[in-house]
Amino acid sequence: MLNNKRFKLKKLFSYLSTFCFVTASGSAAAFYDAYPESEGPYTTAPASENLPWLGEDFERYQETQLLECSNNKSPIQHFDITSGCLSAKASGSWKQGMTDDKVFRVVAIAKDELQQEIKYTDQTNQYRAKINSWKKNTTIPVWAGLHAFARYQTSDDLYVASIRYDGNVTIKVKYQGSYTTLAQKKLANGVKTYLDENGRLMTSQWYRINFSAIGTKLTLSLDGIELLSVNNSLLSEGTIGIRTDYVETYLDDWQLLESEGGGIQPPVTPSITPLPTPPPVIEEPNPVSEFIPGKSKVNNGDTISYNGQCYQAKNNPGVWETPSKNSWFWGSVSCPGTPAITPVPIITPTVIPTLAPTPVVTPTAMPTPPVSPVGPTEFVLGSSKVSNGEVVMYKGSCYQAKNNPGSWETPKDNSWFWEQKNCS
Image (cartoon, rainbow, N blue to C red; front, side, top):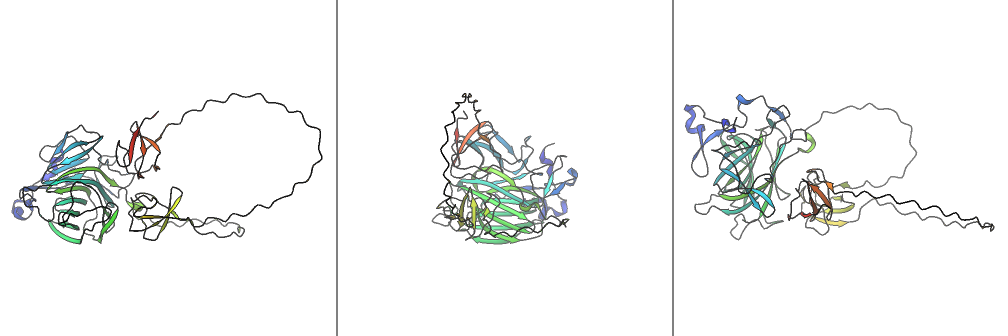
């Protein structure tokens, strides 16, 4: 059954307030329920490796293929477009999604092993977007731009984080049809030039948007830099989604990331077995923590270890800013706790009387067994760690790492992080 069964009409007496909502284009759109009662029961749990969502990198589709429209549903089961249309668009050797609708909305659909749809509690919505151009044939509202949904339940009940045309970033809650701004600030140029000379959001560059809802904490990050954080407890579960307004937009690498910590675990009292008193040891400084891309959070001045080297954080690095020498976010430092080298005492050898030489037996040379070639390591999204120059295999093709790719950077030919190589 197609997903448009989720669109429904509210009671006639509440028509003016809830039957329709007015979109940015001024047209009325039907109320949308991501979890209608008629389709339950539903699973409720935090996002985890046991309850993943398929994600979307658009590589499986044909060039210019129309994936889905809100008024023309397709067999695609892992997302549902509630406004506008989405197509696949090639750029070089890889593909992205593309929409040029003035009002575009899409929500994710995830199911467990029993085919029950999942209401995620703790969740992180991440995607990349490139604003190709603004819809300049009309007045562009200040709130136009790129947005990310979290804990989306209905079109009237959701959290949304925004990177806006007017240069502001916001986190809002929409509850029972009414928006409330929870946090807002002006975007400042940082790792990229985000604003043009008029203070408007720049076009023709990629943005990586990350919006998390962990417990009551809502956090918006852009290109690995945390911008806003606020607490709100109105919504405790739902799905993720993408919204764009008044832009022709390219989309890629849409993911539901695993919740950090996997939720609160109950305390466990361990059984204690008495152990013999160990001999005294010389206490050494604690080693620095290993940096894990996508998970490790650091503060300015913190020292971490990555690929056997140590770095000190500066300029507020995010969880995806891979440590490297002389980068904007990291400075190379010596690793603490390196043990001192104890000199080995010199022993004067005892003189041994000369003996008659023993005949030397020349052993028969044994043939050297052939060495089996070792192929490239298979790259696993979210798990594999690679270094620059390392060759991995992904979906039957081989790629060489460059520019310090993280574990979520999908290998693609001629991307910033990968270059395709011959597997032989």
